Length: 353
Image (tube, rainbow, N blue to C red; front, top):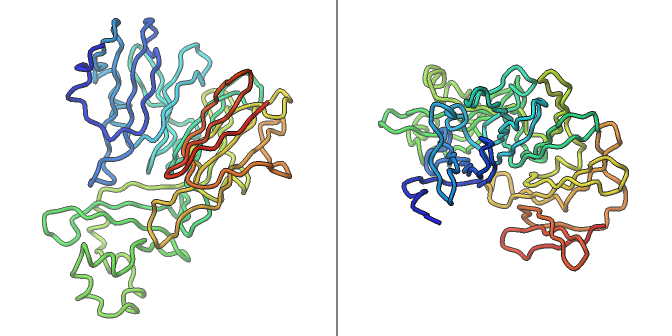
């Protein structure tokens, strides 16, 4: 096969998925990107290649898929028929981004809005789709940052990423804020901020003066208002029930799913009751020392209560510690296994029935 098809297409790839999206009998290739190195907050372009047979690919027409290509950060992409029309939709999740559904309408990908997902901007890592409540339509579940850190977010008190030339040196700086005791607060410490903005040291000689200053005092009201912004409204790992007519209803998963990041989700009927359950794995060690690493998860099994809600059973008999990244199923010599890969560690093998 001719690898020259992909030369000239550069990407800090997060996922590569093969699917016959245009239903012409050949597989297409979707390459997603979560971020651009050194340009945190900018919208990375996604790549979508149309299979034309004999191992050859061409990029889809930008006019047909532009809504997806320039839709923002994407850590995961799945394909599922959530509206029941017989054609799979393209569904994405990423950093500083909502859960997004793109429907194929007359050969064009169109972002679906007003569907209960508009304010789901999060730090999403992974997506799965299945009929969890056995009502005949496809629901969604998405792994997020979690609720076990000092970072919290809501539509009223969001996390915000500002990109602005705060010191008028011709280059944009990045500022991340969150709400603490009802006040918007920089995430970075004074010592960290002065590395990019030395003028802060002259303006605030003491840590006390800096701590008592508002974000508008520090960075300027007009600068903040005119900055490019990305926001996060939801950090919890969630289940989204398909309630029909193109609408989804968000439900936050139990506390056990929120104690760390959720990096991958495996869907299986583990207790053989006819309803699909969830196995979640996660943790993140590669984060700011201000937060300390997120390592509380040892893997979480959530069983379906047959109504589309989930609970953690007592007596969990496995331990998936470390920075777990991915779950895959393997059939070997008549037995089924789950392989959980981990950063800087050996994979874990779980035998399942």
